[in-house]
Amino acid sequence: MINNYNLLKQSINLGGVTIKNRIVSSPISTNMATEDGSVTENLINYFSNIAANDIGMVTVGATSVSEEGGDASNGMHIGKNIHLNGLTKLASSINEQGSTAAIQIFHVGAQGNTFYSKKRVVGPSKYIVPDIGIEAEVLSIDEIVKIENEFCEGVIQAFDSGFKIVEMHLGHGYLLHEFMSAHMNRREDEYGGSKENRLKIVKNIFNKIEKKSKHAIKNIGARISADDFIEKGLDLIENKELINFLDSKKIAYYSVTAGIYETAKQKYLKMKEGSYWEYANNLKKMTQTPIIAQGNITSLELGEMILRKNMSDMIGMAQALIADPALASKSFKGEEEKIIPCLAHLKVGTCHRCRYLKQKDLSFECITPSSWDKNKSHNSSKNKKESFLKMLEKLKDNIANEKLENIEKIQKNFIDNI
View (cartoon, one colour):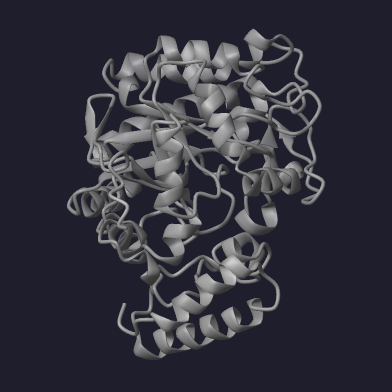
C-alpha cells in the first residue's frame, strides 16, 4: 500500500512565506566555497539538485558572518560586497526549482580550530574545547558590538540575495550559544553573569535587524538547543527567556537540536534514540511558533509519523538527502524500495565522508551512487557504485535482520543511471 504522505505534502506559512510542503533540507556545511567564502558552482549544483526533488525548503548551512567565524578555510561567508553575486545565484538556483531558499548564519566562536580555518579562535571567555585544545581569545566589548553588526549585515544581505528565510544558529555551542551558556560564559561585565546579561548579544542583534528592516524578523528562524548534556549548559528550561523573547519578536520557526562539541557522543546517542523528536514535542508545548523536528529522520514514513503525533510542524533531513537527494520524490511516487540509504544510518560509524572535518583533506563527499557527484564523470559514478556495494556487503554481518532485508532489496532494485 502506497503511503500518501498527506501531512508532509501540506503547505505551511512561515513568516508570510508559503512553503510548498513540510520537508526541510536541514542546514549542512560543505566546505566548498572559495577561500574568501564566496559561492562556487559546486555549491550551486549541490543545493539546486536537492531543491529539484520535492523539498519544501532548502537551508544552506552554517554561513559565517565574520572573517574569523567559520570552521574551515572553504566555508561560506556572508555580509561583504564580494559575497552578494554568488549568494544571489545560489538563492535563485534553489527558488527556481520550486523550493524555498533559506540560509543559516553563524559564528563558530570558541569551537573554532585555527588548524582548519587559519583564523584566530574567539569567545566570550577563555575556553578550551577538549578535543581541539586551543584556548579562545576573550572578545572585547568593541569586538562583540562588531559581531552584532555583522550578524545584522548578514541577515540583510541574505534577504537582498533572494533568500526567503534566514536561520539564526543559536545552538551547538557556537558563539551566540556560548554567550547564553553559564558553562561557557564566565564574563563579569554587561555581557556576562546574569541570564539577562548573557542574552544581551542575541537581543542586540535582533533589535539591530529590526531597526534596519521592520519586516525582516518575521522571516527569521532560530536553531536552539534542547540539552547541552553538561552542567550549567542550556536546555529548554534554561532557554525559556530566549524563547519568550523570540516569540515576542514573532519569528518564523524554531529548529530543535542538542549537544556541543565536547558532548558529541551523548548528542549522537540521543539522536539515534529519536530524542530530538521528543525535544521538538516539548518545545511545541511551550510556544505557538512552528517547530521543525530533525535528527535521524531517515525516511518520509518517520516524518509522517512525527507530524501525525503532532510532535512538530515540519521535519528536517540531512544525511538521508545527502545520500539520496531524490528521497522525497521517490517516496511520493511510491518507489521507496529504490531509495539509496545513508550508510551511517545503517550502522553508526560506518561512513563519515560528508563530515569534512573528519577528512584529512577536509573534502565533502558521499559514497552512495545516487548522491550528488561534483565531478559528473562516468568513472567517478562507477567507482562510487562499486565502493557502495562493497560497503553494503561488509555491513551484512553487522546489522539487524530487518535492515539486512532492506539492503538486499536495495541491491536487487539498484538502478545504474540514477
